[in-house]
Length: 468
Image (cartoon, rainbow, N blue to C red; front, side, top):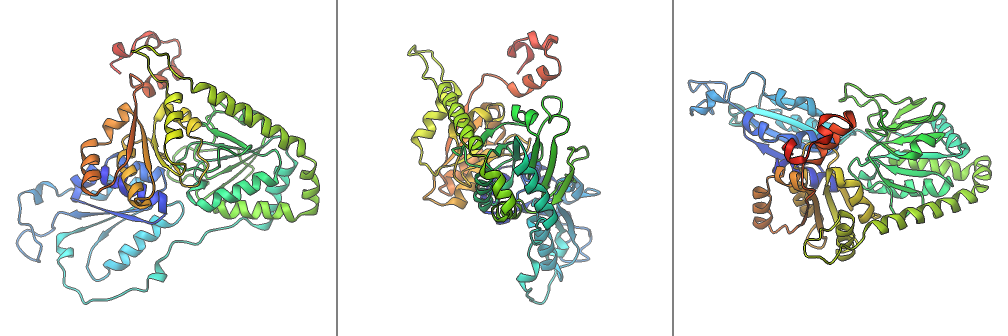
């Protein structure tokens, strides 16, 4: 768990693939929820696992020599993780091992990025081969795709002509250049608002007047927008809680618009495009800026631009008001907004935050107010325990000059295998500030219960009675 989470954090910050080596089937199982997180979080990681030797009597060098070689021999080892991987393959001989690694890395680094899994028996690892080299430039990721000119025109006209245009994103900030292009798009389309749905990256600066902050698929603006552009987002809204009004025009741009690893996914988009969001943002703001007819339209939207500033100022004022100082009594508790506001004020401006606050994430985001690309990394998946190892990987990637802060819920902290985390931190000199938020219970399961049965028996029970 810790090793893969560490590789995940490093890969997310740098977009450079990292490798984890584990021991046969049990080591693969030990990766646990970290594989889910790397898959959902689009982290380019390569996992290599051994495989029990396939000969018993010394037929090849590497044949079975230990009791455990029989116990760890399973029918199909890759099935443990293959549904989370972009690619899984067995190394069957030593002579094409470099090609197999190159192919696995191509899948891991091509959008949507994610884990790749290779495994091989000891006989293969022991094979003698002649040294050889590959031309590494032949093994790169698939190139980034752009919108067609017709798509650029259609989306641009829809955004500029909308009364309440809205852009919803979640992962576009993984490419740090995308943040600047999205800012240019918001500056160009006066009145466009941007909602972050907590995918895993800082996608839009919180200090920009168009920012609506971070919310998990529920926001009033979703229900009133007449044009919505969904960009690199897995859950733009939760239909049972919040959804667009009938007649809303919806466009979807994503490296994986069909969500091929989700059996159930659908949004009523009139058009969807498998493209790179950074490229698309650049195309859109460039086209609008160079189109005389569109420039004339959005030139008259200065009042919307001023209204955004006023709305943003009010929202920031509300957020500041939540960070109230607790009473002076000895048993007073800090509310999360006050605590995080103090952390934000005391740490360096370019601090990188590794966030796994679960039900408190929106409150944390409001007070951190991230505005620099690459300074906010959220798990993006549902496998608790990501942030401990991830914070170490982020620190390793960022270097000694960057401050890294992990903010984690108390239950999630226990899932992160803190003993391993702090051993690695000490061993490799990777200092990280960890803030544990104690909400005095497992509030995520309680919230799930209340969403389905708000007046059920469980709603009347205490945390102690529910054993959470």
